[in-house]
Amino acid sequence: MGDEAKKTDLAVAQRLRRLRQERNLTLAVLADQTGVSAVHLSRLEKGERHPSVGLLFQLARVYGVSLSSLVDEGEGSGFHLLRSSAASTHEGPDGRYTVLSGAHTAMSVIRVQVATGRRTEETRHAGEEWLHVLGGTIVLTISGRDISLAAGDAVQFDSGQPHRVANEAEEEATVLIASTAPTTPTHHPLPR
Image (cartoon, rainbow, N blue to C red):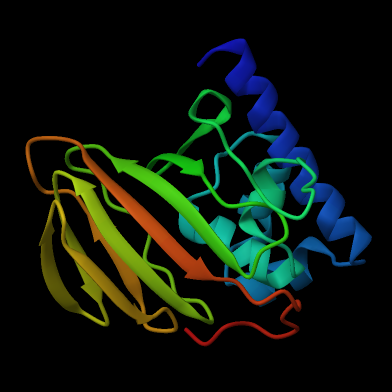
């Protein structure tokens, strides 16, 4: 990992800690609200672990912020323009992801590159999700039902259902995901 990527990852970790502290949440309370252990959350805030895409969505909802504001401090001017040369890609446990949406939107948009044999963590969160396969093939599991998707396929679903993406093919898959993101913080754990 290059120096620039390490700086970005450290900035994300510091932002996560700052948001938690600004909301006067302990790690134990945040763990209750997210279903993620306080130890894991602490490691994320120290930059010792990389958050999964699903966990970033979950944390953004708990904090009442956009996904973009967790990974990029950029301020908007009524619109969000992201040039391809300025897009920053982050490494997570479930693949490389690039946040494409702006900081002040009700929708988060990311591009996820899922390597062969990798799968995202199962997640569920308030809202809706739209997923479009840009390249390769994936298996989307929604509430235990496997759906095979190839390049060009798209699916929209209630993201309160448990879901995950897996790449069982022999080539990397690229997926575009749009997810609604409530801007008010949740004050209770999501049902598991």
